Length: 628
Image: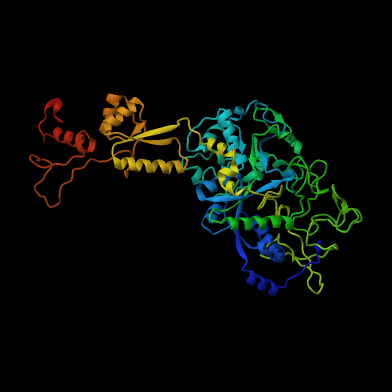
């Protein structure tokens, strides 16, 4: 079923001429799955068909499939991709470490630009949980390490209110490993979340991906909010989700046999409440997902992209933008798509032309039917079936047809069917409308490119086009999971060169948010540094072995960390070196020879050589003063 518009049609020759004349800008959209790649390609084809409607705001969109959002962030930073959408936690990473900036924010039904983080359990379970501290040892399902609603907010609440111990100031994954039982939190073992490679695989035990490359990564079936829901359904005790996730999942074809009453919310105070009570039973409020680009884009380039995407919403979304509903979870925004239980009743094949029900029925609400589509503000409108929207380019006459066309481009089973239009000779050109905020036709994955619950985009003020401005109070939560019981550490050094290196090291550690914060203190000798540590003016110093002995004997200092060199153990050899062309120097007779030492009382440069020579009788001992 297709809509026919009497709109000017450009032939391929005219298109390419227009393209050359206007030098259309290119945009590379970064995707992370085959399904998302298909949707992006459909978007690109729809744009190519309708390029004239964008006028100067048009972009020639191509699609690049990356492994995950981390790769997309790097590609955009390297100017190998242009744009993608990110979760707030990913926006932090992209802005803090890769200089990406958010320019648009998703807006949901009712004009909301945020959603709630919730904990979901199966109804009637976890009867032994009376407070969130009782989640210790439970099997948890996370959207992924770094996800704001699906990881950061719950971990922060557990650290501050749930008796979760801080195991490692610079690796909060270890704190979660220590608290929960076998769980699934994808990316728990990737380098950025496992910096020294000693994380347990406990947070990957419930994940079901195929090894290698598929388990506990973005490609795992339990990745993302949809994956966390599957994890809860099949294996877990609790899942950390968006407040809309359960409704989306039980409304999908894959879970059409489920109802919402099989699940309930677990509140931070330990109460269990119905899913609809998310405003009173949530773990935190999260900014809506954002569209990001490189910070190298100029203000005008960013505005160009904003106009392009807002125009795309106007042309490719049938969801009402100006809905006056007061909540995000209304089930009435798409006519009779949902039954009274909130479940999607159209569960046809995603690859069938009949997947949206019968067409032309006398009263079935199909195209051409007497029922049409119901708009609560306009009543029944038979001209506003699937794909209907307030199109300023549409003439007052809209006709319908039931032409069946095979799938088209890129060997894409979800491809836009051979779109057509009406040319200058009034020849019928048939096409099916692309839906920007719908992913149902591309398989079981939801929220491809954008959230399916989105209605439009909201521009972010230029002054707020950075991760801090976009995140607002949520930035404190992201930094909060990196909290450390030790606020700062003062390192004592003994030379100008060491002081310079210490300052550079301090800057590098702060850039990577390594805790505790390091402060540099200059002492005039190692003995002075020992005294500074003993008095509390400094916390640590790097000492030679013999100085460790002195520090422990005189100042009650203790060693807690040791350097490791190329031997694989915290030790090294003491050696004596002579010039190759000096045949007279022998270790057994050094009387009158000129010797060079690292310093009095240094282990390798003084104590060990003299101890060796004295014990072997090559130097006369003088009792307790022999070493002098």
